[in-house]
Amino acid sequence: MTKQALVAGGGIGGLAAALACTRAGWEVRLYEQAPAFSEVGAGIQLGPNATRVLTAWGLGGALAAIAAIPQRLAARSAIDGTELAAMRLGASFSKRYDAPYATLHRADLQGLLLGAAREASVHLRLSAQVTATQDTGEAVRLRVGAGHFEVEGDALVGADGLWSAVRGHVFADAPPAATGHLAYRSLVLQRELPAALRSQDVTVWLGPRMHLVAYPVSAGERLNVVAIVQGGASGSARDWDQAAVAAELYAAAGPLCAPLRDLVQAMPHWRLWALYDRPPMRGPDELARGRIALLGDAAHPMRPYLAQGAAMAIEDAAELGRVLAMSADVRLEVPLALRRYALNRWERCARTQARARRNGRVFHATGLLQRGRDLALRLLGERLLDQPWLYR
Image (cartoon, rainbow, N blue to C red; front, side, top):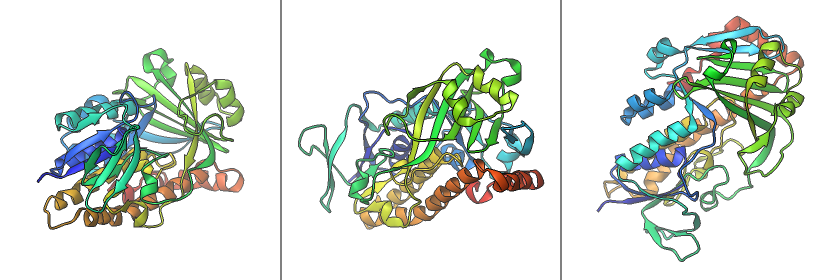
């Protein structure tokens, strides 16, 4: 008999999980609480550890059509504009890791995965909030909406994000905590920018208690800009799309070099959200319990200082699909397969979470630490920027 996987959440992680489970021979039912599949207007970076998975799923051509493939990543001083270090991307990077480094719009990636899920006959249901969960030992039951338990499957994947409702059935801990950092984001058509501000590369501007990253998305047609500054949370903790103005960003960022000020001023609109996260994972029990597994931000939210949030969710999905393919053979029980998934993923995810936190301290360094960082970048350059342990 074909086994059924239930997926809570229709973002990038949930759709990747659904696609991986269908490839493993499972029937999949996905429940998204929003009335439409949508993503906030922000870009993401995908290292070769993620693009390699998408290519293996047969999505390499579709990815190439929507993504930009930057040729270079440069780190610059936000104070005086000097280049501190650079790393070659493009063809040489792709050859090194057998997969490209891509930058793209979140909605474009979600659309790619949604199309693949539909082609794979994933059952998709919108306006379907999971309100209750029960692991009976023999199956998982869900209540969707205000009714009684009305859905039953062999496994449940909680891919419902940072504020996951499923998480408590796997690992009950404190709610996500404010990081003390605010993210400002903006998106603009490159043709609307002065020529000097257009870019097909990734640029990271490092300053005291702040940094800003800019890179192309939408096959290079748009420029995505995200500035992260230290400051108290404002508005609702769960609101990823608060209104913001450039004056607030200027006040929080402090003195900026002229090219960076010009870039900030050229952005037509700014949106804001406060960053929340959880501590790095401490063991496999935070990833799976019984017939329920967590994936992506529901399990291990990533601070954005290593650009690995979406990539880790895609990696999770690939490993989940691998172990569930084994459980298609009835001799491997589903709880054992999910335990194997947790054991195989938690240490890598914890390491990535910890490294992202460390990068945040380095990016926003002041005083002696800032001078040491800049010197190390100038001396080591690409050797310091590259992350073979991650990208391989």
